Image (cartoon, rainbow, N blue to C red):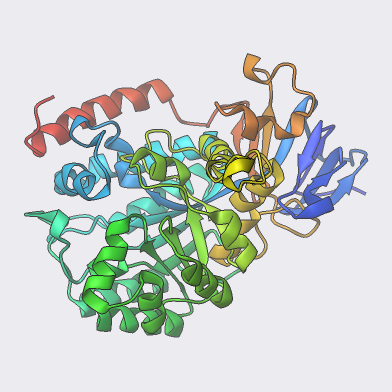
Length: 476
Protein backbone atom coordinates (compact mmCIF):
# COMPACT_ATOMS: atom_id res chain seq x y z
CA UNK A 1 0.00 0.00 0.00
CA UNK A 2 1.34 3.42 -0.95
CA UNK A 3 1.41 5.87 1.97
CA UNK A 4 0.73 9.50 1.05
CA UNK A 5 2.34 12.49 2.81
CA UNK A 6 4.64 10.20 4.77
CA UNK A 7 8.14 10.37 6.22
CA UNK A 8 10.17 7.59 7.78
CA UNK A 9 12.85 8.86 10.17
CA UNK A 10 15.13 5.86 10.14
CA UNK A 11 17.85 4.34 12.31
CA UNK A 12 18.17 6.95 15.08
CA UNK A 13 20.88 6.28 17.65
CA UNK A 14 18.66 7.51 20.48
CA UNK A 15 15.19 8.99 21.00
CA UNK A 16 14.16 11.14 23.95
CA UNK A 17 10.40 11.55 24.10
CA UNK A 18 9.73 14.50 26.43
CA UNK A 19 7.80 12.17 28.75
CA UNK A 20 8.44 11.16 32.37
CA UNK A 21 10.08 8.16 33.98
CA UNK A 22 10.66 5.02 31.96
CA UNK A 23 8.80 6.56 29.01
CA UNK A 24 11.43 9.32 28.68
CA UNK A 25 13.35 7.20 26.16
CA UNK A 26 12.22 5.05 23.27
CA UNK A 27 14.34 2.37 21.64
CA UNK A 28 12.97 3.20 18.20
CA UNK A 29 14.99 3.29 16.05
CA UNK A 30 12.43 4.47 13.46
CA UNK A 31 9.56 6.97 13.47
CA UNK A 32 6.83 7.05 10.84
CA UNK A 33 5.01 10.30 10.13
CA UNK A 34 1.75 10.39 8.18
CA UNK A 35 -0.12 13.62 7.42
CA UNK A 36 1.85 15.58 10.00
CA UNK A 37 1.35 13.13 12.89
CA UNK A 38 3.49 10.38 14.37
CA UNK A 39 1.82 7.13 13.32
CA UNK A 40 4.34 4.51 14.51
CA UNK A 41 7.60 4.16 16.46
CA UNK A 42 9.72 1.01 16.36
CA UNK A 43 11.66 -1.14 13.89
CA UNK A 44 9.88 -0.12 10.70
CA UNK A 45 10.32 -0.80 7.01
CA UNK A 46 9.91 1.86 4.30
CA UNK A 47 6.61 1.84 2.46
CA UNK A 48 6.16 2.57 -1.26
CA UNK A 49 6.29 6.30 -1.94
CA UNK A 50 7.48 7.11 1.56
CA UNK A 51 10.29 9.65 1.96
CA UNK A 52 13.14 8.38 4.14
CA UNK A 53 15.16 10.67 6.39
CA UNK A 54 18.35 8.87 7.43
CA UNK A 55 19.00 9.49 11.14
CA UNK A 56 22.03 7.18 11.47
CA UNK A 57 24.29 8.42 14.29
CA UNK A 58 21.66 11.06 15.14
CA UNK A 59 19.69 11.84 18.29
CA UNK A 60 15.96 12.62 18.06
CA UNK A 61 14.22 14.98 20.50
CA UNK A 62 10.75 16.50 20.44
CA UNK A 63 11.22 19.93 18.89
CA UNK A 64 11.67 22.55 21.59
CA UNK A 65 8.81 24.76 22.80
CA UNK A 66 10.05 28.22 23.79
CA UNK A 67 7.50 29.79 26.15
CA UNK A 68 8.95 33.29 26.69
CA UNK A 69 10.80 35.56 24.29
CA UNK A 70 11.06 39.22 23.20
CA UNK A 71 11.97 38.91 19.54
CA UNK A 72 12.45 42.63 18.91
CA UNK A 73 15.48 42.49 21.22
CA UNK A 74 17.43 40.42 18.67
CA UNK A 75 19.03 43.70 17.54
CA UNK A 76 19.85 44.81 21.11
CA UNK A 77 22.54 42.32 22.09
CA UNK A 78 25.50 43.26 24.27
CA UNK A 79 24.70 46.96 24.67
CA UNK A 80 27.56 48.39 26.79
CA UNK A 81 25.32 50.62 28.94
CA UNK A 82 23.38 47.58 30.13
CA UNK A 83 25.83 44.70 30.09
CA UNK A 84 26.67 44.93 33.81
CA UNK A 85 23.32 46.23 35.09
CA UNK A 86 20.65 44.42 37.06
CA UNK A 87 17.05 44.44 35.89
CA UNK A 88 15.82 47.93 36.84
CA UNK A 89 18.78 49.88 35.46
CA UNK A 90 19.07 47.52 32.49
CA UNK A 91 15.45 48.20 31.47
CA UNK A 92 16.10 51.92 31.27
CA UNK A 93 19.44 51.55 29.47
CA UNK A 94 18.42 49.00 26.88
CA UNK A 95 14.85 48.05 25.87
CA UNK A 96 13.14 51.24 27.01
CA UNK A 97 15.84 53.43 25.49
CA UNK A 98 15.82 51.72 22.10
CA UNK A 99 12.29 50.57 21.46
CA UNK A 100 11.17 53.92 20.07
CA UNK A 101 13.93 53.67 17.46
CA UNK A 102 12.41 50.66 15.69
CA UNK A 103 10.65 51.01 12.37
CA UNK A 104 9.00 48.22 10.38
CA UNK A 105 12.21 47.25 8.61
CA UNK A 106 14.32 46.91 11.77
CA UNK A 107 11.49 45.25 13.67
CA UNK A 108 10.96 42.65 10.94
CA UNK A 109 14.70 41.99 10.77
CA UNK A 110 14.92 41.52 14.54
CA UNK A 111 12.05 39.03 14.50
CA UNK A 112 13.63 37.15 11.60
CA UNK A 113 17.00 36.89 13.33
CA UNK A 114 15.45 35.58 16.54
CA UNK A 115 13.28 33.03 14.78
CA UNK A 116 16.17 31.79 12.62
CA UNK A 117 18.33 31.38 15.72
CA UNK A 118 15.59 29.38 17.44
CA UNK A 119 14.87 27.19 14.41
CA UNK A 120 18.55 26.30 14.05
CA UNK A 121 18.55 25.10 17.66
CA UNK A 122 15.64 22.72 16.98
CA UNK A 123 12.77 24.90 18.22
CA UNK A 124 9.37 24.53 16.52
CA UNK A 125 7.08 26.60 18.78
CA UNK A 126 7.76 30.18 19.87
CA UNK A 127 5.77 32.25 22.36
CA UNK A 128 6.78 35.88 22.04
CA UNK A 129 5.90 38.28 24.86
CA UNK A 130 5.55 41.25 22.55
CA UNK A 131 5.24 44.65 24.21
CA UNK A 132 6.59 46.92 21.46
CA UNK A 133 3.47 49.03 20.95
CA UNK A 134 4.05 52.73 20.37
CA UNK A 135 1.66 55.67 19.78
CA UNK A 136 1.20 56.30 16.09
CA UNK A 137 2.97 53.18 14.85
CA UNK A 138 2.57 52.97 11.08
CA UNK A 139 2.80 49.18 10.89
CA UNK A 140 1.11 46.22 12.56
CA UNK A 141 3.88 44.58 14.58
CA UNK A 142 1.75 41.54 15.42
CA UNK A 143 1.17 40.93 11.72
CA UNK A 144 4.92 41.09 11.11
CA UNK A 145 5.58 38.46 13.77
CA UNK A 146 3.00 36.04 12.42
CA UNK A 147 4.30 36.55 8.88
CA UNK A 148 7.91 35.87 9.84
CA UNK A 149 7.02 32.73 11.81
CA UNK A 150 4.95 31.45 8.91
CA UNK A 151 7.79 32.09 6.47
CA UNK A 152 10.06 29.89 8.58
CA UNK A 153 7.40 27.23 9.14
CA UNK A 154 7.19 27.62 12.94
CA UNK A 155 4.26 27.55 15.33
CA UNK A 156 3.79 31.01 16.84
CA UNK A 157 2.06 32.22 20.00
CA UNK A 158 1.65 35.99 20.28
CA UNK A 159 1.57 37.06 23.92
CA UNK A 160 0.14 40.53 23.46
CA UNK A 161 1.99 42.71 25.95
CA UNK A 162 1.35 46.31 26.79
CA UNK A 163 0.52 48.60 29.68
CA UNK A 164 -2.17 51.00 30.83
CA UNK A 165 0.22 52.84 33.15
CA UNK A 166 3.88 53.79 32.72
CA UNK A 167 6.69 52.15 34.68
CA UNK A 168 9.20 54.39 36.46
CA UNK A 169 12.13 52.75 34.64
CA UNK A 170 10.67 53.96 31.34
CA UNK A 171 11.53 57.55 32.15
CA UNK A 172 10.66 59.68 29.12
CA UNK A 173 10.03 56.70 26.90
CA UNK A 174 8.07 57.51 23.76
CA UNK A 175 5.84 54.53 24.51
CA UNK A 176 2.93 56.06 26.32
CA UNK A 177 0.46 53.68 27.95
CA UNK A 178 -2.73 52.58 26.21
CA UNK A 179 -6.15 52.89 27.72
CA UNK A 180 -7.66 49.64 28.96
CA UNK A 181 -10.27 49.87 26.20
CA UNK A 182 -7.58 50.24 23.53
CA UNK A 183 -5.64 47.30 24.90
CA UNK A 184 -8.62 44.95 25.15
CA UNK A 185 -9.98 46.01 21.75
CA UNK A 186 -6.68 45.12 20.11
CA UNK A 187 -6.49 41.76 21.87
CA UNK A 188 -9.98 40.95 20.59
CA UNK A 189 -8.95 42.01 17.07
CA UNK A 190 -5.95 39.69 17.21
CA UNK A 191 -8.02 36.79 18.54
CA UNK A 192 -10.52 37.16 15.71
CA UNK A 193 -7.79 37.31 13.09
CA UNK A 194 -5.23 34.79 14.33
CA UNK A 195 -6.23 32.64 17.29
CA UNK A 196 -6.71 28.91 16.69
CA UNK A 197 -7.86 26.85 19.70
CA UNK A 198 -6.78 23.54 18.12
CA UNK A 199 -4.48 21.30 20.14
CA UNK A 200 -1.84 21.52 17.40
CA UNK A 201 -2.48 25.15 16.40
CA UNK A 202 0.02 27.05 14.31
CA UNK A 203 -1.20 30.40 15.67
CA UNK A 204 -2.36 31.45 19.12
CA UNK A 205 -2.98 34.73 20.94
CA UNK A 206 -2.47 35.28 24.69
CA UNK A 207 -3.45 38.13 27.04
CA UNK A 208 -0.10 39.32 28.39
CA UNK A 209 0.20 42.68 30.19
CA UNK A 210 3.90 43.28 30.57
CA UNK A 211 4.21 43.00 34.36
CA UNK A 212 1.34 42.89 36.91
CA UNK A 213 2.84 45.10 39.65
CA UNK A 214 3.88 47.81 37.21
CA UNK A 215 1.92 47.74 33.95
CA UNK A 216 -1.67 48.11 35.10
CA UNK A 217 -3.70 49.30 38.07
CA UNK A 218 -5.06 46.42 40.10
CA UNK A 219 -8.59 46.81 38.76
CA UNK A 220 -7.32 46.54 35.18
CA UNK A 221 -5.61 43.24 35.93
CA UNK A 222 -8.90 41.72 37.00
CA UNK A 223 -10.56 43.03 33.85
CA UNK A 224 -7.88 41.51 31.62
CA UNK A 225 -8.19 38.14 33.35
CA UNK A 226 -11.94 38.09 32.88
CA UNK A 227 -11.67 39.22 29.27
CA UNK A 228 -9.13 36.48 28.48
CA UNK A 229 -11.36 33.77 29.91
CA UNK A 230 -14.33 35.14 28.05
CA UNK A 231 -12.31 34.96 24.83
CA UNK A 232 -10.99 31.48 25.62
CA UNK A 233 -7.31 32.50 25.61
CA UNK A 234 -4.49 32.13 28.13
CA UNK A 235 -2.74 34.64 30.38
CA UNK A 236 0.98 35.38 30.65
CA UNK A 237 3.28 37.95 32.22
CA UNK A 238 6.55 38.53 34.08
CA UNK A 239 6.56 38.09 37.85
CA UNK A 240 8.95 38.06 40.81
CA UNK A 241 12.12 38.28 38.76
CA UNK A 242 13.93 40.30 41.45
CA UNK A 243 13.50 41.37 45.05
CA UNK A 244 12.14 44.68 43.75
CA UNK A 245 8.93 42.88 42.75
CA UNK A 246 8.61 41.75 46.36
CA UNK A 247 9.36 45.23 47.68
CA UNK A 248 6.97 46.96 45.28
CA UNK A 249 3.93 44.77 45.89
CA UNK A 250 4.48 44.60 49.64
CA UNK A 251 4.78 48.38 49.82
CA UNK A 252 1.73 49.07 47.64
CA UNK A 253 -0.58 46.23 48.59
CA UNK A 254 0.76 44.64 51.78
CA UNK A 255 1.12 41.14 50.31
CA UNK A 256 3.38 38.96 48.20
CA UNK A 257 3.34 39.20 44.36
CA UNK A 258 1.69 35.78 44.05
CA UNK A 259 -0.98 36.64 46.62
CA UNK A 260 -1.60 39.89 44.72
CA UNK A 261 -2.07 37.95 41.48
CA UNK A 262 -4.42 35.50 43.21
CA UNK A 263 -6.53 38.37 44.51
CA UNK A 264 -6.93 39.69 40.97
CA UNK A 265 -7.78 36.35 39.31
CA UNK A 266 -4.33 35.88 37.78
CA UNK A 267 -3.63 32.31 38.94
CA UNK A 268 -4.81 29.06 37.36
CA UNK A 269 -3.94 26.36 34.81
CA UNK A 270 -4.49 28.90 32.01
CA UNK A 271 -1.77 31.21 33.43
CA UNK A 272 2.01 31.05 33.27
CA UNK A 273 4.62 33.55 34.45
CA UNK A 274 8.17 34.17 33.30
CA UNK A 275 11.01 34.07 35.84
CA UNK A 276 9.52 33.54 39.35
CA UNK A 277 13.03 33.70 40.79
CA UNK A 278 12.07 35.23 44.14
CA UNK A 279 9.33 33.16 45.80
CA UNK A 280 8.73 31.98 49.34
CA UNK A 281 7.35 28.56 50.24
CA UNK A 282 3.76 29.78 50.53
CA UNK A 283 3.89 31.36 47.08
CA UNK A 284 5.15 28.11 45.57
CA UNK A 285 2.34 26.27 47.33
CA UNK A 286 -0.26 28.70 45.94
CA UNK A 287 1.10 28.45 42.42
CA UNK A 288 1.22 24.67 42.59
CA UNK A 289 -2.27 24.32 44.05
CA UNK A 290 -3.70 26.51 41.27
CA UNK A 291 -1.77 24.79 38.47
CA UNK A 292 -0.10 28.05 37.43
CA UNK A 293 2.99 27.51 35.24
CA UNK A 294 6.44 28.97 34.85
CA UNK A 295 8.59 29.92 31.87
CA UNK A 296 12.03 29.31 33.37
CA UNK A 297 14.68 31.62 31.81
CA UNK A 298 17.96 30.59 33.47
CA UNK A 299 20.41 32.43 31.22
CA UNK A 300 18.68 35.81 31.42
CA UNK A 301 18.22 35.42 35.17
CA UNK A 302 21.94 34.67 35.46
CA UNK A 303 22.99 37.46 33.08
CA UNK A 304 21.00 40.07 35.04
CA UNK A 305 22.12 38.68 38.40
CA UNK A 306 18.55 37.92 39.45
CA UNK A 307 19.15 34.40 40.75
CA UNK A 308 18.03 30.85 39.96
CA UNK A 309 14.37 29.86 40.08
CA UNK A 310 13.75 26.70 42.11
CA UNK A 311 11.87 24.88 39.37
CA UNK A 312 12.46 21.50 40.98
CA UNK A 313 10.48 22.60 44.04
CA UNK A 314 7.86 24.21 41.81
CA UNK A 315 7.30 21.04 39.81
CA UNK A 316 7.08 19.02 43.03
CA UNK A 317 4.39 21.43 44.23
CA UNK A 318 2.32 20.81 41.08
CA UNK A 319 3.41 23.65 38.80
CA UNK A 320 3.88 22.98 35.07
CA UNK A 321 7.49 23.87 34.23
CA UNK A 322 8.60 25.15 30.82
CA UNK A 323 11.67 26.91 29.44
CA UNK A 324 11.98 30.28 27.69
CA UNK A 325 14.99 32.06 26.29
CA UNK A 326 13.78 35.60 27.20
CA UNK A 327 15.01 38.48 25.07
CA UNK A 328 18.39 38.73 23.37
CA UNK A 329 19.07 42.03 25.13
CA UNK A 330 19.45 40.14 28.42
CA UNK A 331 20.58 36.83 26.93
CA UNK A 332 22.93 37.19 24.03
CA UNK A 333 22.46 33.54 22.99
CA UNK A 334 18.74 33.08 22.48
CA UNK A 335 18.55 29.45 21.45
CA UNK A 336 17.03 26.46 23.17
CA UNK A 337 20.21 24.37 23.28
CA UNK A 338 22.21 26.85 25.35
CA UNK A 339 19.11 27.56 27.46
CA UNK A 340 18.48 23.92 28.34
CA UNK A 341 22.20 23.40 28.99
CA UNK A 342 22.06 26.29 31.48
CA UNK A 343 18.87 24.94 33.08
CA UNK A 344 20.55 21.57 33.64
CA UNK A 345 23.65 23.12 35.22
CA UNK A 346 21.96 25.81 37.28
CA UNK A 347 19.49 23.54 39.06
CA UNK A 348 22.44 21.42 40.18
CA UNK A 349 24.40 24.49 41.24
CA UNK A 350 21.40 25.81 43.16
CA UNK A 351 21.05 22.62 45.17
CA UNK A 352 24.80 22.43 45.64
CA UNK A 353 24.80 25.90 47.20
CA UNK A 354 22.77 24.49 50.07
CA UNK A 355 25.34 21.81 50.90
CA UNK A 356 27.01 22.20 54.30
CA UNK A 357 29.70 20.16 56.07
CA UNK A 358 28.55 17.60 58.62
CA UNK A 359 30.02 19.57 61.50
CA UNK A 360 27.67 22.44 60.56
CA UNK A 361 24.62 20.18 60.33
CA UNK A 362 24.89 19.26 56.66
CA UNK A 363 24.05 15.83 55.26
CA UNK A 364 24.73 16.08 51.53
CA UNK A 365 27.75 16.71 49.36
CA UNK A 366 26.24 18.59 46.45
CA UNK A 367 23.43 18.97 43.95
CA UNK A 368 24.15 16.67 41.02
CA UNK A 369 20.87 14.83 41.65
CA UNK A 370 18.76 17.96 41.25
CA UNK A 371 17.76 17.60 37.59
CA UNK A 372 18.41 14.99 34.93
CA UNK A 373 18.73 15.59 31.20
CA UNK A 374 15.37 13.87 30.81
CA UNK A 375 13.84 16.39 33.24
CA UNK A 376 15.22 19.30 31.24
CA UNK A 377 14.04 17.87 27.92
CA UNK A 378 10.57 17.37 29.42
CA UNK A 379 10.48 20.98 30.66
CA UNK A 380 11.60 22.30 27.29
CA UNK A 381 9.15 20.26 25.20
CA UNK A 382 6.00 18.72 26.68
CA UNK A 383 6.19 21.13 29.63
CA UNK A 384 6.12 24.04 27.24
CA UNK A 385 3.25 22.57 25.25
CA UNK A 386 1.33 22.13 28.50
CA UNK A 387 1.60 25.76 29.61
CA UNK A 388 0.61 26.90 26.11
CA UNK A 389 -2.35 24.50 25.98
CA UNK A 390 -1.03 22.77 22.85
CA UNK A 391 -1.98 19.28 23.94
CA UNK A 392 -1.05 17.56 20.66
CA UNK A 393 2.48 19.02 20.62
CA UNK A 394 5.70 18.48 22.56
CA UNK A 395 6.37 14.75 22.82
CA UNK A 396 7.40 11.82 20.67
CA UNK A 397 4.33 9.60 20.88
CA UNK A 398 2.01 7.98 18.41
CA UNK A 399 -0.78 10.40 17.54
CA UNK A 400 1.15 13.57 18.40
CA UNK A 401 2.11 16.28 15.95
CA UNK A 402 5.39 15.40 14.23
CA UNK A 403 7.53 18.20 15.66
CA UNK A 404 10.99 16.62 15.77
CA UNK A 405 14.54 17.93 16.17
CA UNK A 406 17.13 15.52 14.79
CA UNK A 407 20.71 16.27 15.82
CA UNK A 408 23.92 14.94 14.29
CA UNK A 409 26.65 14.86 16.94
CA UNK A 410 29.54 15.46 14.55
CA UNK A 411 31.40 18.18 16.47
CA UNK A 412 34.41 17.42 18.74
CA UNK A 413 32.52 18.46 21.88
CA UNK A 414 30.31 15.39 21.39
CA UNK A 415 33.05 12.90 20.53
CA UNK A 416 33.58 10.21 23.18
CA UNK A 417 30.03 10.30 24.56
CA UNK A 418 29.01 7.02 26.19
CA UNK A 419 25.34 8.06 26.03
CA UNK A 420 24.64 10.00 22.82
CA UNK A 421 21.04 10.72 23.91
CA UNK A 422 22.16 13.35 26.40
CA UNK A 423 24.65 15.06 24.06
CA UNK A 424 22.64 18.11 22.93
CA UNK A 425 21.90 19.17 26.52
CA UNK A 426 25.12 18.24 28.35
CA UNK A 427 27.45 19.35 25.57
CA UNK A 428 26.00 22.81 25.11
CA UNK A 429 27.21 24.58 22.01
CA UNK A 430 24.97 23.86 19.04
CA UNK A 431 24.90 20.39 17.52
CA UNK A 432 24.41 20.14 13.77
CA UNK A 433 20.71 20.06 13.03
CA UNK A 434 20.17 17.17 10.63
CA UNK A 435 16.51 18.12 10.36
CA UNK A 436 13.74 20.09 12.02
CA UNK A 437 10.27 18.76 11.27
CA UNK A 438 7.26 20.87 12.28
CA UNK A 439 3.93 19.18 11.78
CA UNK A 440 5.74 16.79 9.46
CA UNK A 441 7.08 19.65 7.32
CA UNK A 442 10.84 19.81 6.74
CA UNK A 443 11.78 23.26 8.03
CA UNK A 444 15.56 22.84 8.46
CA UNK A 445 17.59 20.27 6.50
CA UNK A 446 21.29 19.59 7.12
CA UNK A 447 21.60 22.81 9.11
CA UNK A 448 20.22 24.89 6.24
CA UNK A 449 17.08 27.00 6.06
CA UNK A 450 15.75 27.29 2.51
CA UNK A 451 15.83 30.83 1.12
CA UNK A 452 17.88 32.23 4.02
CA UNK A 453 21.37 33.63 3.46
CA UNK A 454 22.94 33.87 6.92
CA UNK A 455 25.81 36.06 5.73
CA UNK A 456 23.35 38.53 4.26
CA UNK A 457 21.27 38.40 7.44
CA UNK A 458 24.39 39.28 9.44
CA UNK A 459 25.20 42.22 7.16
CA UNK A 460 21.65 43.52 7.49
CA UNK A 461 21.90 43.22 11.29
CA UNK A 462 25.12 45.26 11.42
CA UNK A 463 23.54 48.01 9.35
CA UNK A 464 20.38 47.96 11.48
CA UNK A 465 22.37 48.28 14.70
CA UNK A 466 24.06 51.42 13.37
CA UNK A 467 20.69 52.90 12.42
CA UNK A 468 19.18 52.06 15.82
CA UNK A 469 22.12 53.67 17.60
CA UNK A 470 21.67 56.85 15.55
CA UNK A 471 17.92 56.94 16.16
CA UNK A 472 18.43 56.44 19.91
CA UNK A 473 21.17 59.08 20.06
CA UNK A 474 23.89 56.60 21.01
CA UNK A 475 27.43 56.84 19.71
CA UNK A 476 28.72 53.60 18.20
